[in-house]
View 1 (cartoon, each protein chain N blue to C red):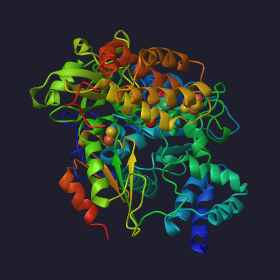
View 2: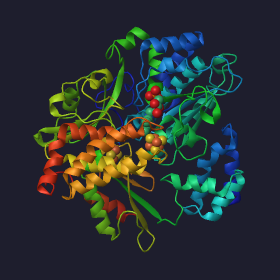
View 3: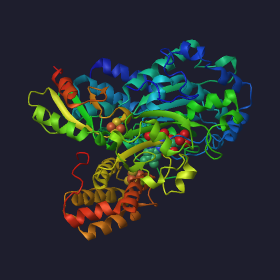
View 4: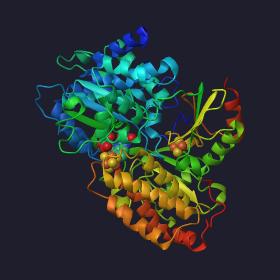
Length: 430
Length: 153
Ligand SMILES: Cc1cc2nc3c(=O)[nH]c(=O)nc-3n(C[C@H](O)[C@H](O)[C@H](O)COP(=O)(O)O)c2cc1C
Ligand code: SF4
Ligand code: FES
């Protein structure tokens, strides 16, 4: 179990302390100062402050958090709600888990600040079902807060500021990380994403005005409110301020988490993780969870901020970096990735349901030494047909990694077809 | 459905703006009775939630963590997504298959272990990872995997 990142920052500074996941430990380290400060401000000013900080969502899409909060209707005769997206299932991503296990109160304090800013009275934290310890820690934290009077009515002595938090367990479905799939699941249904519009701020959980933010997004909020916009903007890039918990996995000597500013060069992150294992050369790096297109070694100088990665044809996603060494067969990687998307498509859109199955079948055929030139052509055309026009972005997420592999490692696929076998006997076992 | 299960479920209703929000937690509670959910239990749930049995059945079969057939006394799942595969997870799964004499997706004849593979468990920094009866076992090698499996009663 990872108990603390290999490099810590303001978010994870106290993760190594035994009591950081208890209310007393969190308050000793300065916890709940920020929410008290926020309560002295007007709700709209709190939203503005978070907007000005430039904090972007850490769930993958990178939307400016404070701006999203302003989409909530100011006046509403129905209850407004927040949803904390703790479904973390993007392969390569394992940061939200650590935040929930080691720093649950920063998430909860961030939620209270967002509740004040948006007028929400209730929060559902939707945690993926496999995360037994995070669920336990969050439930214990919520109970401690209620016992302390930090949940319920008239919080921190503020009349009219009432809030309740429910920790809700998912049940094993990647698509429930997509925010409207999550909302359907929270309502006790299959997690099939909704057509948008209407957006969650108008019609969200149980039809109520809703704002959905990622675990890490909420966890940054208390630090921003406490220390200010200028301080926060002292980390990261102009368009992507702050730190994030980068995950580095795969063929590195010391996989793990590293809290560093957005924009940190990819090469530096890999070096922090001990570099490529056994002194081998790097063949490919996926920068942000398996949904994001792969990068070749010539791109390792790129800064890990979305606007910089976009220039190289990929995205920051969740900041889950996967390193593959020179022995790795990219067709095998494509088999693993495409199997995942085939398995997790919710099946509502034809091009997603059929396309994910086709891609996996073709990749497996090529890997088995039975591929043809027609199959290569299909790997060009099928992902292109899946992009855009679906109910949710899952189909794009399934198409992008294949497009990335075909763009940078087409030679691997061609060699399989030419030799009618896998030319990488040293590669990881399939 | 046992009366205590029903009571626990009814206590959940007030947490949600609509009763149906409690359906997933309710399924977990029902499933805890015998390790899986039968058609009769699904019907009892439907009645309690004012739903049609098919509404409950659809939900049961959508999610990986709900079971609609009898399971082994213990669950062993091996994560086989990319970061784990890069660190040998699929070889590990094959060794466990050989050790137990079953394939992923099957249960040993004595009903002791159900073996399966799983998508990313959010533990890629400590790959390869197994989930044994809901508990994460990280940085597992072949020897440790055998020890974990043999320790199950
Ligand atoms: C297929 C798919 C899976 C997603 N999975 C997650 C997830 O596990 N956790 C998460 O926070 N966001 C996930 N997202 C993004 C959410 O839809 C949403 O943008 C996010 O929760 C908003 O929070 P943020 O603005 O704070 O990032 C996913 C999106 C898609 C399309
Ligand atoms: S794109 Fe795929 S996952 Fe998203 S709604 Fe359509 S079928 Fe479901
Ligand atoms: S790939 Fe196995 S835990 Fe992420």
